[in-house]
Amino acid sequence: MQGGSFDVAEGEIVALLGPSGCGKSTLLSIIAGLEAPDRGEVRWDGESLAGVPPHKRSFGLMFQDYMLFPHKDVGGNVAFGLEMANWPRARLQERAAEMLELVGLEGYAKRDVNTLSGGEQQRVALARALAPKPRLLMLDEPLGALDRTLRERLLDELGGILRAMHQTAIYVTHDQEEAFSLADRVVVMNRGQVAQIGTPMEIYRQPKSVFVARFLGFGNVLKGKIKNGVLETPAGRFEAAGLRVQAESRQGDELPVLLRPDAVNLNGRGRATIQGVVRGRRFRGNTCRVEVETAGTVLTFEFPSATPLPETGESISLWFNPDEAIQVLSPR
Image (tube, rainbow, N blue to C red):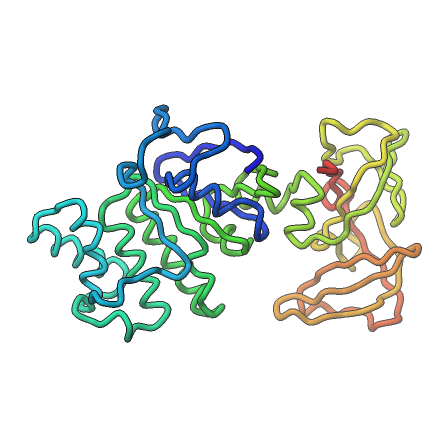
């Protein structure tokens, strides 16, 4: 880890989002007390947790592989943390039953965990993590081993469960759809540093840097310059008034510029236009991705799949408002 700071409010779900190797899981281990930070500290309610061992932090941790105990039945797995905390037997069994009902596994207490599906194992692991009433629940890629359909369904259920319990949580993922669907706020990480923090809408609509824009899949990052109120780019010259510009940007500097792929249209609405030739089309279910060559530069745009589009090799006119479609980014 190189550096980064953020806070988590009570009952808030925060996602740590970034590519593999960016430090997400390392940061989670530091928060859990499994690793010591090289510098800085973890605080809870203003009190430093330096020197507090993991089992005394009252944090829950759930991993991708669930780590269920194969020699214990479902109920035994859910009750494990309660046994370690010396809960009374009657209350322990009652709490385990409550948790199984919460995750939709009522009546599963005596089931062998080895006979469960991946989705059922995930629910058992979640019930076990929630049973001791952790003040913070940390989830490390908990849905990564599941197929897409099951992952989407369980993601919705997970969000509902965490919010119903007002559970404070940190969710680690490399999947932006998971982060945006589940989290109240997203912390985007890059090489051990916090690249951007914001709500899912803020991150998606206003990426601040080239890294964040490219990580979100926005490929139309161009080099531009602002001169006398005009933004000059390889794709054309556009009015600069109203553009979201990073504070460190200066007139005449070469700046990275994002042209949003979803902010153009074919019906003539907008103050600016790009003329080009269609070089490729890819059907992507709900959307169609179109590659357009203009002034020797190939840009990619997305349209609803039902939109009538020119064929490959045909001319295309794209209309947009620069203040909505263009953003000047930080190079970092």
